[in-house]
Length: 427
Image (cartoon, rainbow, N blue to C red):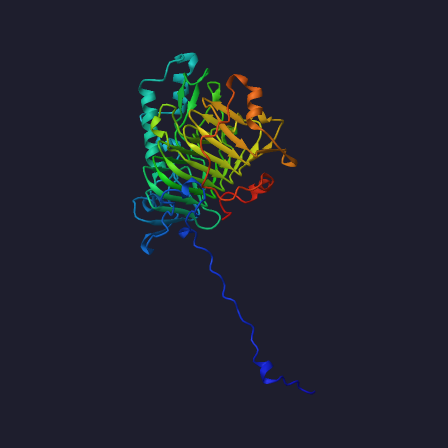
């Protein structure tokens, strides 16, 4: 057989190899310039400047609590599932483990049943035992995050369950790529004077931002895991609510961006401002919500007092069950809602999207409706729909400010596929 001999020049030809690009370090990423209110002021960089000794990987509640404390720049990577209701050695804790002073739910229900106790507020040794038991749980599940911190999920399955994460009087904090799930209260209190029929009130938001500045909340999932509110029992004729809110931005917090999160299956979801009487919130509570999926929420998506709040390019899945309203126009609120898509299920009408909670005006434009997750997207005037349905609480449309910190506002039809792009595991 004759052998083929290549010319020397041909034999030496080699294919150039392009070096593989390293995956971006999510712990070092910062909020881009112009991306919502959180980019204003000093901007939000979290722990991006952390030294190597202040980069942590944590997988237990105790490790997490220690890692997020303090004001030095730090990056905390969360691995796997962290359960706040666990002892320092990792042993799971039940509600019975927190109970002190002889408290049991059965005794509480028997003692304060309105047919027995009447419609007065609970008092006496058993109510004191409930409060002491609640304090015992709070010490375990409430965790404070310090300034100059980035908390980010490692991989696609980072979950923190049962924990109430609090950013209180801090600055420059980033939380990303986390599933924050089922922050339940073992010891809800009965308040017979709440509403016309009384209510059960619980503590613990999944995430509370209080008195803090420059915070970025991005690509997280907020839900109740295996303990959804729709499956909670009734006691004294009212839902035995063991959850509070998913996210509160309150008490003069300022410059916050909330982006690409999924908020799911909760009655009371998001507050911006928590009291009509807190006049110190004036000029603050500046928050941007963009590209979030508000999925099956009952109310407060968000409910706003005082703040200049920009709500744009969000996808709302609106269904019966707990649903009351989405956009809450509260006392001295300055809501600006544009190019949001409302997927209306179960015959719910556009007139139910806005709730007037003591506000006067809301600026809205470019918003649209879709029916049952499919079909044609149609524009809607939300204020007109609200005012026709509830003329006694009609809202105006006076514009007192114009958003300046926003990435490109997309056409509303581009939001149809947003639910596939948001939440934990989608960075």
